[in-house]
Length: 116
Image 1: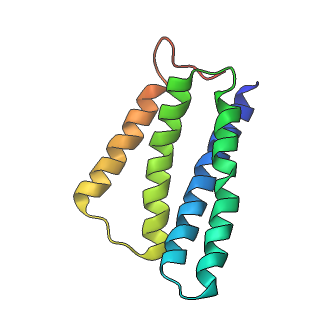
Image 2: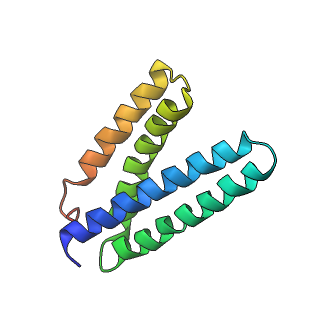
């Protein structure tokens, strides 16, 4: 599997997980049949996450792939939910976001850290 495909699969997985979480949070705030609508949409979108994760893990270092996805995914998830639902982040939370970004960047440097 080529390098761009791995990164594309990881990106789609992170976006799918985040969009599914937005659907589930929106479903929790709704009433009536809208709950079911958002729940189903979240599950359909969420299916792409594990599927793309499996594609990214194929013939690649699982420690690096999963750690990169968790680092990028955690940051993306918090920032998107902050923007979509106008949830306030404290200075300590922003600091932890920058630490996650720094740690994810450090993963890319090292003897066994290359993604093919």
